[in-house]
Image 1 (spheres, rainbow, N blue to C red):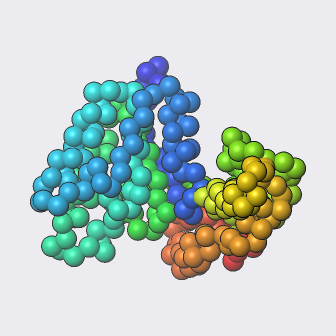
Image 2: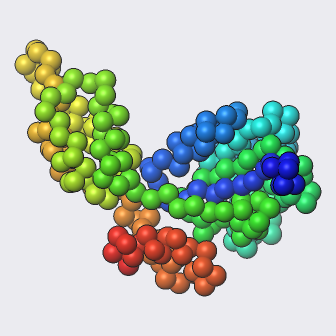
Image 3: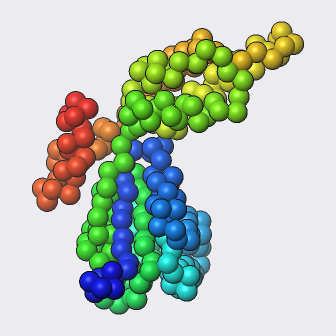
Length: 256
């Protein structure tokens, strides 16, 4: 990057339905880069008293700069960077958004070695100024897990539990549309069924496909409301092409 006179900084906004692993992807990016990882949640920076939130944001960026190279990860970034057009003139969030914009701006801040990642379920609520070059340079859609990923997620959540006759491909086939969080819920519910049966019989028995099938039959994908909102955004608020990637995904899944 030095040879090409390119700044070793950047920003990436991950968006998509809840429970699909945006935070895990952020941590994986940090590991791939061999950089320190700093996760910032709403409670870490939003405070009750006027001015404290802005100071917290500045402190977070100062710490990241001192420890570069690092990945600075803002979860639920829409809560910190909410659209200013949707805020009242007296809203206490307005100066918070302005501070975040200032700290991320390549023109006003030296963030070499600091890679800023953000995650949000509602990119349409993020201030447009945060999504311009020099701040979050790119947006990437993180969708539902495909069949291979669903099998891997189930394998992961059942890995340390007594199991017998688990058919991962069968589970993956019947859970299309489930998020990673939904699949974790299926595994937990199936385990509870086996555990309840074991408590009645007095003998530990493994989790079986019957347990998984029973649990999956009772659980519905949790991302339906998100996709309803996303469909409306693509239909009525995508004039500039911001959500073209999302639009292609919806068409591919025949959600539109």
